[in-house]
Length: 149
Figure (cartoon, rainbow, N blue to C red):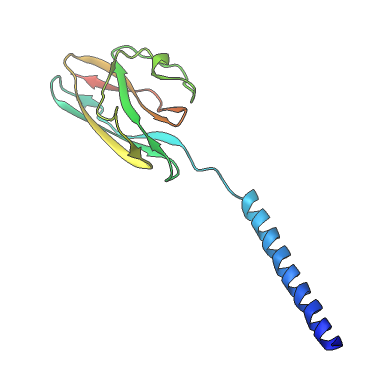
């Protein structure tokens, strides 16, 4: 009987040690958890394009795989809107008069790459930004430009 009690106490001690070890490891992993990146990046666009020709724009939305967007677009115009935009600035915050609606309706799984072709009808410098709404965050690229000849 005494030997049986010693085995039970030893077993409980080993079991308790393993539970404590797992708890400590889990706490370390929780502290080291980093939030998934949520960003928009312009991948490619032309420097110059001729009036009436197609210009290809490509952008990438980086996020955790459990997120999606219902809207991503290019906003553009012939006047610059160089202000610094935050995740609370909706498309109304920029003064670009034009946007393309190819990805304006649907559910697009993230992360993903998007592409769009634009045709400009008059010459000049076209200023633009790519945009996406993910949950409540408004994501913006920096302002870039294309010269239309």
